[in-house]
Image (cartoon, rainbow, N blue to C red; front, side, top):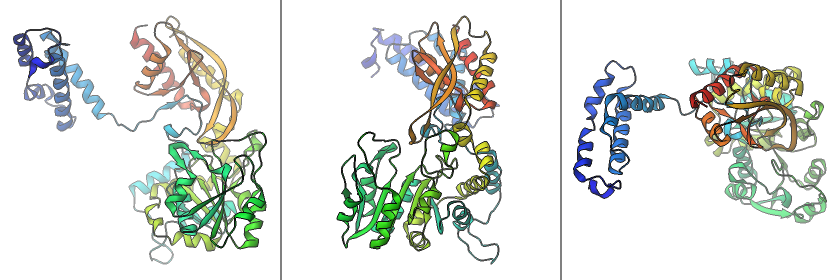
Length: 478
């Protein structure tokens, strides 16, 4: 069997001799006597390294028996064991400049949310227990009042994400009936989330109106039938049309819905409780404005512009929200105690907008002045000093950050960062090594250099970022 892969032309006897030189698993395990790592993981690491050496011998890539000695094998096994012991879900330094980075966990929670998470994780809590009556309570009541006070809605419900919120409302209000949507709002966002497909899963029947770029109120009026259950308005997230376009204002749509006895739903996508145009960002409708315009039900995310944990928030008229709460599907989509604890803490910060903007990381990063980002970049540059002088160049540069998460797709945020250009390795190799570092650093390649945008690097991450850069360059010997 071994002769099938002897590509290096070694005689079968030489291959068999090498195979016999591979130490036995039980013998290698003796090298780890007294080790504190779990025995099962040690054994797995040993087996994997020895199996890899066996494959190399059979493929003709290993011909020196010295590679099978303890001094060669032990570091390899220890490295493999370290990989097994290292958590798969790890923190990274986000130097991409994308604030709400979906692949990196979206919004960061404020310090005020961390103590409640620890408390409910290590103690029993009144998740579904009414402390006033001593009877079973509802987990939703723990944040419903806060959401109503902040948005002006009559009632509220929270599920595990906004896709679930949209699905649940559609299934509740329109299963087997028609939902009218502007053709220009039938978007697909990240993860292949398509409005038409979600609607199909809910059992609702899609009725498209208008043209791709222009929809008028008369288009909705002409499409209403006895089978119409809902008028739906969808935020287009990371998609925008410009030029000869028109869409129906929510106030006009809700007036039509009220006149015809048909509820109006708006999916805001990211959603926001703050008018960011006051801070120099593009104007987006807030949840409060949407409720005030007459929407019967509004859905939005908790972990995007809100800056909280992953959640789908549903607010609106009490009669509708009560129907949604009673949907059996609601149980499959409900949130856990950690989401509730974090969401409550974040929502409470919004009663003081100044405090919210200052302490909720997403809001703080989005509104951070350019001068503050530049000071952060200079701090990193000073920490690097001349450590990389003979291995690469580091330059302070102006750049543009992105909001991310499908929010404000046209908005570029003026930012500052460091452009790192290695001398003796490719920028792609530098990017790879930073990802593989003890503290992974995620940047972006731009203009043949690795750009580290400091908008999304916290002050307490500067030292670790500098140390990782120095370590990566130093370990390369370049």
